Length: 139
Image (cartoon, rainbow, N blue to C red; front, side, top):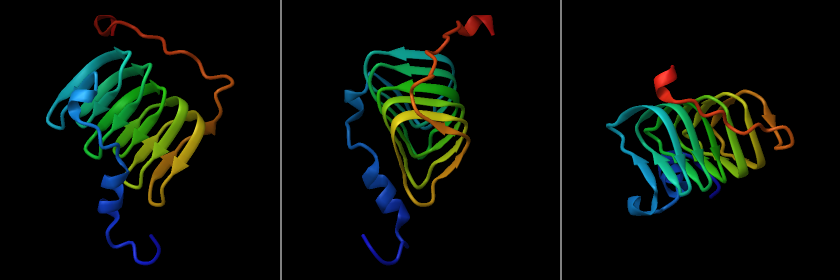
């Protein structure tokens, strides 16, 4: 816990939720690229490349290999990868050491590990707007 930080990857990996892929309603693997919108009642995990909007009534996890250009809305959001877009977490937003976020974040509770990069504004939920989901075909 204290002392040398030579093993940052081990710390980051242990901080990601240890949930089997079967427990996610939607999973985007690291070799997958998707453009569009995702709306889910359950948890979503993204380890691949995604562009669009992510909306979940549950948790959203962006793994270390996740490369996202999207706005993300979730109950709790955990980020270990790269995001270009805004994030709204109704509960906790956890930004792990390997994260790079470029965009504004709004959440009830924020946790940022040493080494994480957050370029944007941080705010509470008081004025957080609901997502405007457009069909991918209209873009």
